[in-house]
Amino acid sequence: MKKVFSVFEDKFLPVAGRIGSQRHLVAIRDGFAAILPLIIIGSLAVLINNLPIEPFQNFMVNVFGESWKDLGGYIWNGTFAIISLVVAIGVSYSLARAYNVDALAASLVSVASLIILSPLTEDGSGISLHWMSASGLFVSLLVAVMATEIFRKLSQLNLSIKMPDGVPEAVSRSFASLIPAMIVLFIFGLLQVLFIDVIGTSLQDLIYKAIQAPFQNFAGTLPAVLGIEFTKSFLWFFGLHGSNILEPIIEAVYIPGLLENTKLFEQGVSAHDVPNIITKPFLDVFVAMGGTGTGISLLIALFITVKAKQVRSLGKMSAPAALFNINEPLIFGLPIVLNPILFVPFILVPLVNVTIAYFATSLGFVPKTVVMVPWTTPPIIGGYLATGGSIAGSILQLVNLAVGALLYLPFLKVLDRSMIKNVTNTSKKEAV
Image (tube, rainbow, N blue to C red; front, side, top):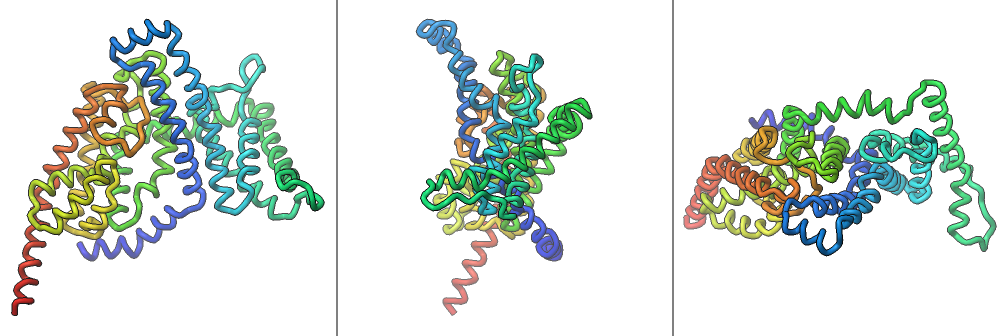
């Protein structure tokens, strides 16, 4: 086992570390993080509109009339309906800041580039919101990165128009970015001519059919999500932040599925009947309870079986953070990192939880996730909200926590015996 760990440390971990710090992936991760409040607000608006509590629905109709749900619809228009647009802003801004380029100018240029590439409505009166939603997400990410990179390189060629002293700084900055912005927009304008007038289709439609839809379909399979959870736990075991490293992939792939579920749920479709099982909140509420490795299950097993005082003390200190899905105190304090005794359960428990949740959802015992809840939402509450107000979501969380604790128990017993033995041997040596 030590030889295996040594090989991974020498060969695999440096590559994973470079991927985790790769500038564009970090920008995508930070861009999604920036728009997360909009996703949560839009999800909660949909949940309130469709909360399956008849007395609440009757009360709202009696007090505000049949049109009371319009408010949630307007919030939807400002969040989910333009998700690709705001993602482009967030990713471009984050990437430009990493390059120390004018981030505001770069994000505005990226948005303008995305608008240029966006198809019009059938009557030509405006831009199609269909491609501003999750359907155009891959193009949005591509445009944000490409436009920012081109803008950055042009800005470094000293093509800026310098204004005389005394001109307000905001005006000077806008003129400094005028020529690079003009060139970027001209490039994307030519691209739109190529796709619409020559090829006869939009870039969004082409990428969605050729890349985004097939990739999302594959990512929604059980083997794919098991691979992601394995990789995340495996990286954490070696001290790398697996969640941050994989977050750009997870969000780009699994947020569109959530948005599709939420849109249908907002239209009155039952959470059981929406199409996507695996979404971002599916992983957050049914697997990462207490953080990677299902830390709350680890704590439950720890308090049941461990007698070593230092471990129980650490468990008590880690419990409040784990309740909000933060498990760094356990990972580095127990420790889990490079602890061969805990390697198997730390990898295994998330895989088992994913499998249980997947089949419980696919068999109809639990509704699919339709609401984006903050990843720090405690268990029971998170499962109820994410499934559109279903107690079955909370019950599934309890089942996964119990199964996870049972899997951790035998390994923690071994760890406990080992630590007690070490303490005893140390005491004997000190006595001598």
